[in-house]
Length: 190
Ligand code: HEC
Image 1 (cartoon, rainbow, N blue to C red):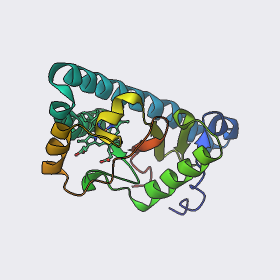
Image 2: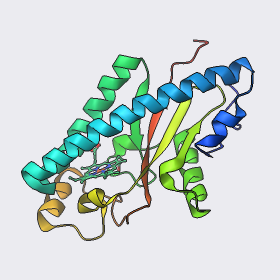
Image 3: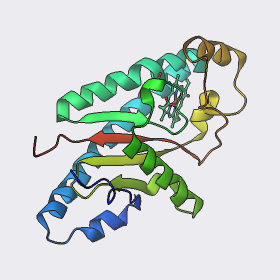
Image 4: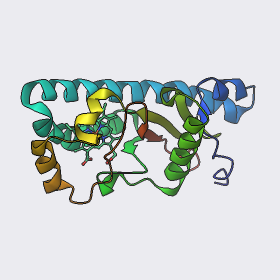
């Protein structure tokens, strides 16, 4: 493979496009960027809708099941549909199943550094130079605080305690990076 070290460049929206000039590898990466963005946009919007309607119908405590069950369901549906591996991950993951791999962890850390330097989290994305690995940061919005903020309602606490006895995915404020979407494309040379 040999691209791992070069892969650690988390980038704001405009940069990967600017890098794409002629090389076959870069052309591939360029197509992958658009496709990856489209898949994640679909994932994000379906998740947002599911979460919002569940919050309206049953309140945040009931909606914890959406984040738990619906997110992986949508992820595997999209993975099958596009022949990729779609995931959510975070440096402070609530579910150990969402633990980042080493490359994801490095990209998440890079996103954090970029955000510290003033880059808006909703613009942080990453594509490695073979186009095989894509990530997009997920900013924390007001909607998230009911379950990822500092003060959770007692029924939310109770709902979370059952499934997630050790839960570092709290204490977030609006605008922080909650985690990232990730896509792994199948390797060309396998
Ligand atoms: C109703 C409660 C609830 C709300 C609201 C909510 N989440 Fe979650 N979130 C959860 C639960 C529960 C999990 C664990 C899911 C699992 O088991 O895979 C989770 C997991 C995640 C993960 C995967 C990484 C991890 O920590 O395991 C991300 C990323 C995430 N949430 C982002 C958000 C964002 C961004 C928002 C706001 C748009 C949000 N969540 C709103 C309950 C919620």
